[in-house]
Image (cartoon, rainbow, N blue to C red):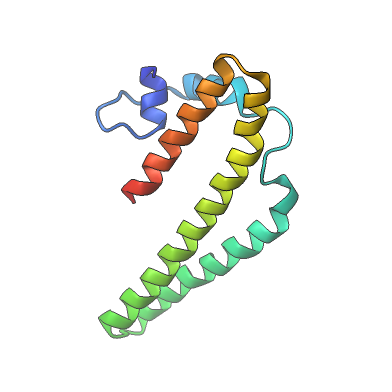
Amino acid sequence: MTSTEAALNGAPDAPAPTDATAEALATADHDRGPHGYSHQKDQHRKRLRRIEGQIRGLQRMIDEDVYCIDILTQVSASTKGLQSFALQLLEEHLRHCVADAATRGGEEIDAKVAEATAAIARLLRT
């Protein structure tokens, strides 16, 4: 993994990528064609708006001096909502992007698997 990829993947001691380097890396493969989530954009937007509402509810609870445990319950619900969204997006990535790379073979599949593995690792750290 290059230092730029390490930084983009959240490696703690990796140097921060420059905007130009990060953009070049992202443009290299990520901007091609429709993404795995494209066919469910409306569902994803709806889900994210629901999570956004939960976060706003947390802010309101703080403003209204709601009991700590009740706020923590809402934090848990919001966190689970984001985790569920992330897993759905990951599944779509595997079904679309990784599967597409597998049909092409070569180094591309290795790169996609490494990318998905890094994303999973980031999800597990949260």
